[in-house]
Image (cartoon, rainbow, N blue to C red):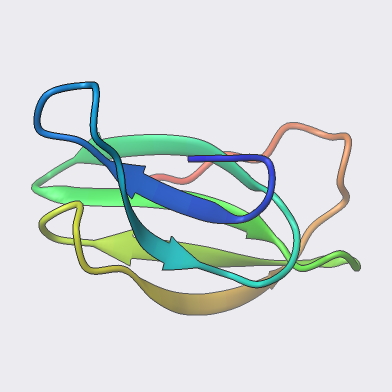
Length: 77
């Protein structure tokens, strides 16, 4: 994950492949639980989007949430 809103994967740690690009804002707090990868995307305003993937390769944007950036944001799953 990058501060530019991109998600990359690598099988060997040397060659990286871009898997997802939000085209705006950073991605925070990548996590894995119950067979799901999740992260929070800052859209540059006062809203965040949950990013979700079941395999770490294919990502989709889910719910839009009002978030006070600078505070602690947590995802529970």
